[in-house]
Image (cartoon, rainbow, N blue to C red):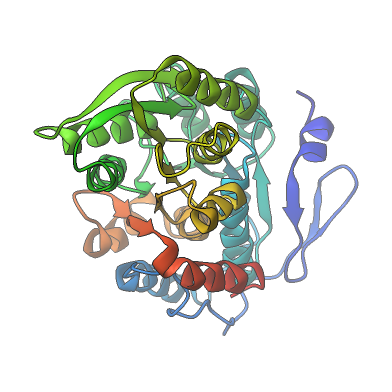
Length: 370
C-alpha cells in the first residue's frame, strides 16, 4: 500500500502546534507542553478501580516532563474498525493532546488479516517509531511485527495478548480469561436450572477470543449449562447475525448465547427479539455497543462484560511515546510497580440494567474529552 493511500485511510487528529502537509510530512511540532490538562482520575466505567492505571499515567507523564517529543511518530492499529474501538480512538486522542503529539489511528474495516499485515509493513517502512496494536493473528503476524521492531518501531500489544515470540514490551488490556469467566458466571446465574448455550465469536485464532472462550467454559464447569456450539463469523457482523438466527432456529433447547466480539451480542439480541424469545434465551454480551445497550434496556441482553478500550488507547500512546524518548529499558522499569502478573491490566466489569446509567455517563464524559 502506498503511503498516500495509507494516510487517506486513517483517523488523524492534529494537536498542539503539529501541522501535516498533504503528503503526510511533518512540518513543525513543539516539545511537550507543561503543564497539560490531564484526564481526571475519576473518569472510568462503573465498578472499575483505575488507581494503578492513573498512577502509571502520572509516572510516565512526569518522566517525560522537559523532554522533546518532536520525533514521536506512534500509531494505534486495531483489529477491526468496530464501534468498540471508538472509545480507544478517543483515549489515543486524549493522550496525544496531553503529550503534544499526533494521534494516529487505523485498522482493517472488516478485520481482514491481509490489510492489517499491509498496515504494519507500510508503517515500519515509512518512519513510524511506535505501534500499539490489537493483533488479529499473533502467530502468523509475528515475523512482520518483529521486523517492525528491528527497524526501530516500539511495540506494545493492546486488547489481545501476543506470544513471547513477538517482541512487544508489554500487554495493556483486559485479562481475557477473567472476562470469559465473568461471562460464564453471568450465564450460570441466568440459568440456574442449566441448559444448552451457543458461543458467537469473531475469531478462532485471536488470543483474546480464545482466552475468553476458555474462561467462559471454565466458569460453567460443575453446572448444568452446556456449550453445544461455537460459531465463528470471521469478523463479519452480517455473518454474526446469520449465525445467531441459525442457532436459534436449529436448537430447540437453546437457553443462552454468549457473544465474544462486540457486535456478536447485539446480533444475538436482534435474533432473540425477532423470534419472540426474550426471557427464554439469555444473551450475555461483551462490551457496550449501542445494540447491547438497547438490549439491556429492553431485556434481550441479560448482562454485558465490559472492558476499557479507552484506557488501552490512552496508555498505549503514553507507553510507546515514552519508549521513543526515554528508551525501552527505562520504560520497562517504570512499568514494574503497575503490572499485574506481568501485564498492565485494564480490568473487567459487568454491565446490567442496574449500573447502565453510570456507564452512559462515563461514555458521554470521554466523548467530550474527559
